Length: 220
Length: 220
DNA sequence: GGAAAAATGTACTAGACGGTGAGTTCTTGT
DNA sequence: ACAAGAACTCACCGTCTAGTACATTTTTCC
Image 1 (cartoon, rainbow over the protein chains, first blue to last red):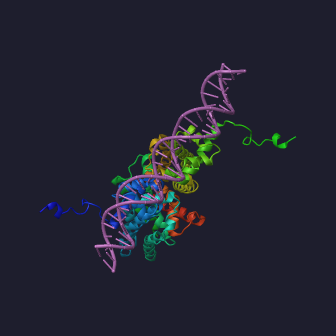
Image 2: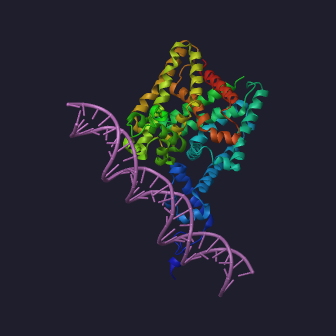
Image 3: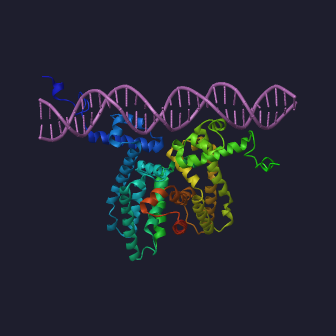
């Protein structure tokens, strides 16, 4: 008998069409992430997204209806991915100062490892945040980490190691802003000051600085 | 006699054409700033820029040759404006800690008051900084403030009020990142955490926090 | 096995958009 | 006064781009 017709290769090289809605949808979404993250909303081209997929432009509209709705899905996906990994921090188990150190280092690395997230958030702000405003999902997703921080701050205050009158959201911003900016603005900053912010030595030095700066600020 | 024909309004309603190259060029540049800052490079429309001017699209190409070259002029203009106002800080005249406080507060307000600059820099980073790389002007313009900061840090170290081994560029980033982020990301941050970062009370509180955080970090 | 529905392919379109050709009016220098 | 060049107007073009009409194939469900 003919081996070839018996042992057909997984799926792809099979003759004729094979419907696979979930995979097609996911394929499009991943292609869209790449395109939007690289070019922004206005700069992204639906045709270019189509070329990044196994399927056609027609399918993009079949599943996502419009360029803008596709963008919204990309936004929600990237926000969701980021916020979910933030759940495994377990700050409550650590001594307050140790918890802060952990949070700062995590934030620093997390931002560095998620450039797509950084870029989509920048893009969204260029867009005046009009799409985050449309997404109730994103809003609820993001509160978690500030709640965790707040718990640590209160614990530290109760233990007398942190100063009173701290605002968790402000401290969150103090940490996030640095972690975000290093990545979001690395092209202009890097070019102007001729420095490679991705270089491990620079990153290590700046991470330590941020830790220090935050801990000293919180110090009673 | 007819009043209308005697007292002709300044220039605009005068009959016939009136050449005014500098004004036309400046008019276009201002319109371009508004459009690019609002919509980004890819999102900006040359026709929309033309509509914002007294003149026509043809004149945009007459003076600026292409959309991208116009964008580059906008970028250089906004960078130039910002960097020039940074020259009047006179940090060298102040006691080190006072100089830092002055620098932080200035940076904070300066960013808040120059949203166009914030946005064009964000846009440029979305663009992978490809236009800053083309502009030697911008590079040289931006070094000044870090040099000033460096002088203050050295003075503080010599006086024993600041800790050793400080990196001026890192400290500059610590300050700038917060000042920048509060504005660049205010749409997403504001929406997600339901806070108005422009509110004077919030701004005042965060400005004080940043001062404190930086000064405590520098403290010997 | 066959009808209905879901998924996909092909080819196309209307309008937007960056850019220009060619001619006219104004200004400057002599 | 007039030539030459700068500044400006008007109408236009080719291409790109989001989105779609319509036909076809695959899957589901009875």
